[in-house]
Image 1 (tube, rainbow, N blue to C red):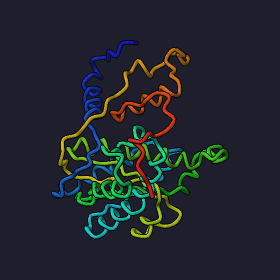
Image 2 (cartoon, helix red, strand yellow; image 1 turned 180 degrees about the vertical axis):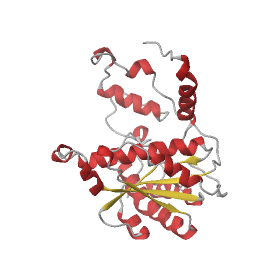
Image 3 (tube, helix red, strand yellow; image 1 turned 180 degrees about the horizontal axis):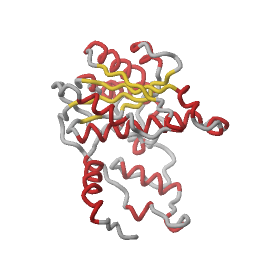
Image 4 (tube, rainbow, N blue to C red; image 1 turned 90 degrees about the vertical axis):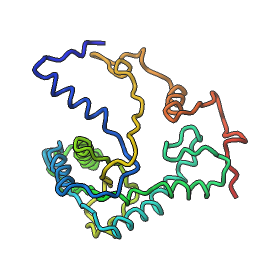
Length: 270
């Protein structure tokens, strides 16, 4: 692996930046305490400088502080998004399910599991939500070739992702916690917030003071993922090993050559 030595003139700036990235973490429990005036706007100010195709800047932001509106958004998330994703996750081996849907007792009635998962969602208690929406028409500014093979939406979401990542880092620099709330089914939020049909609802960002210490996930080693000049085939791993890798991320062990859930893992369903 090549040296990571940095010229002295840039060392301090890089160390500060890397430290910020390493210490940023998704915070799933935020205090209801108010945050200083202008902090949310500072976070958005950082995000608006993100990269986008042809500098089209397709993002807009709805800052939600009203308690009733925050609750309506969170209720919609619980009843629409979580329920949809929960039943989708039931198709996976338990060891490979998304961490948010990992429960200790897989034999429990799945409907009770679902209610437990819903009960853990309390981000409406945060003092503010930033709802990030995207105007795909602004993305017409990018090259037409991006639209030819179905990549127009990708260019739009690429720009929105760039913007949101910067906002999460900006919040961390202010000592605030945030969470990345992916929106899978958009209609409820459009109704609640009166968002025009031509927009997409990309992300919900609860923002506030952390109520828990951040938990950092493990990271793969740099040398494992970097290739020079061409792909290093010695680093390629097979499909079964990928499943082992994913199970390891979940803190589980995947039995090799398993072809069914087995009696202990598969809950009975009526």
